[in-house]
Image (cartoon, rainbow, N blue to C red; front, side, top):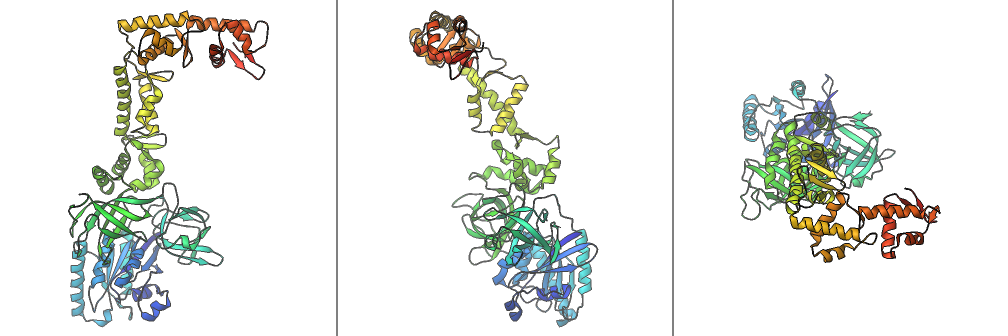
Length: 632
């Protein structure tokens, strides 16, 4: 069954609630005070039967200027606007404000209802039509919405209105069900036997009985016990429907108006929003950088500071009718998503001045160079949005669970895009990176190894961990591993043990360094099983630590020496002698003590322990509680 949410809008006492009652037969003024005063002060809801497999929910909002905050909570999530104007009065201040709010929130379709038809003649009605048309032109830029005159008293025009709503509903597209669940809460209360009940309009996704959901603020978990749509029990509820959700494990105090019920990974609260901000052409004031404003997103109101593109003091303000990039520094975190629409009102006096769309959640302090990608997210197609959102993450990349929030696209659409071979995106270790960033990581890896070779041409390679450490300063570890795998498989880099080298690199020694290399090997070999310590070798040869360690690595790689410990190297001949001596220890015993090895090796304890540990490490011997046993 297709679904539609219709919202009323218009000045106080223009007959919105009477119209809803005439259409649906339901009194939407829930409070005694509302009925006594004849003044709607809070949201009301009613189902409307239009047939043709169409499920319609009507949201009746207050018209008085003191309750615009409540009106904003009801206007969120509506598909079609019923702009109500009393025929005997014509457009009034809240007519314009409500119409502007609907435009800001992206409500593109509507029907104008001229109420109290029974109080005016044709001539007056014609004047009212003209005045409303001018208001539509002024706020929307067109006057294409159907305009019907009705009387809630006599019933005149109601059938024509039903037909118009049916016709408009037919041209509205269906909502995507493969999206993440999000339902802003506009009411919460306790019901005996049902626990906490929250109500709202399902913005996206589907909620089913038994689902585990999360409620913000506070990221509290709860389970769905039951669901209702206008008092009718349901097993699941999709988008564009008014829904009452009974939750297990949640106190009503933790889900006030402004809370959000969500499901799925990735949802989080943001304290900064990168936005495209616009000021209404008829706004009485402009927006200046640093100004304190009220931001309305979903059913929540949050105070914020505007930081315009120009920056701090002296920044040019946004004049009425203008738009530009800005940051909203929120005083309270809220749940948001790319492409979300919001309304901005002045802190004091509280008047609507504009609104905009969310482009990025929690952007960095330095954001001016990000607006090109913001433009693609807000104006581009699905692929452009994905590319831009991933591009904003730079070398850190984006987790797949974050993409529905940063792109505004459903997981279903993202899965379809993932299969596109032409999409310039790389997936590594569960994170997404732009192809340009992946190429930058590959180039950086090659440059780091190349720079090391240039600085130390005699060194056979560079430590793999040193390369990783340097790259992770700019790139996520997952991308570093992806880049490393790529250059290794392409043969551009060769890995030898824990070291990397360019495939074109050969360690080169000067004649003087070659002579030092020969002397170094001679000193180590002459020492037998008690060669000079590394620090002593440097003093004997009169060389720097850097040259000494480079030469030791070259000798090790060539198989001419073995590294016993950080301070001890054996020549290959001495290493063979060590293993032969160890074998002789076990000619007359199965288990040997350190003293047995000491007698056979003829070395001091200073060398004995490192030599024994080297034999264990090279799997010649194995240490047990009784002593060492032969493994060779």
